[in-house]
Length: 137
Image (cartoon, rainbow, N blue to C red; front, side, top):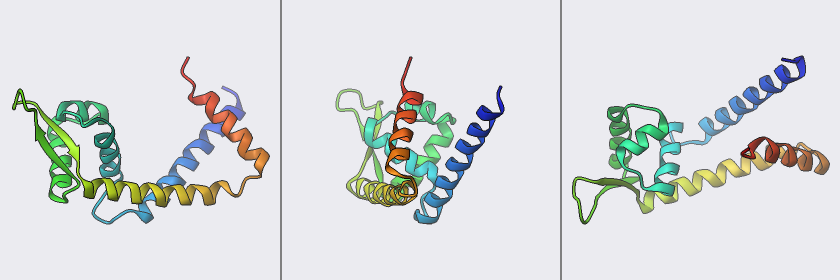
């Protein structure tokens, strides 16, 4: 692998770490990054516990512990299927939606601040590069 690619990989990890640290400094002391990621998943999918565990790459007991905390904080609730009550979906509450949206706005503002360091042409080039990298083959 070329030295340039190694430098790019290092810069990507450094940028990710910086964004993570900024997120950590802005988040609620009661809500970890994993909780925020979980809220986002629940908001988009209303998953079953097994689906959530698989998506996060954790064991079902770990997912249960994670969801128990979010239920206790009233960010999510468990909703039994109307036809088959053995099927239980995790659903985001109004409080959870508000918390997640507030957090997203704070992070977006911080990212705007970070990206404002780039010139317009650098921002356009970054957008072009990120689109290329994220495109599925």
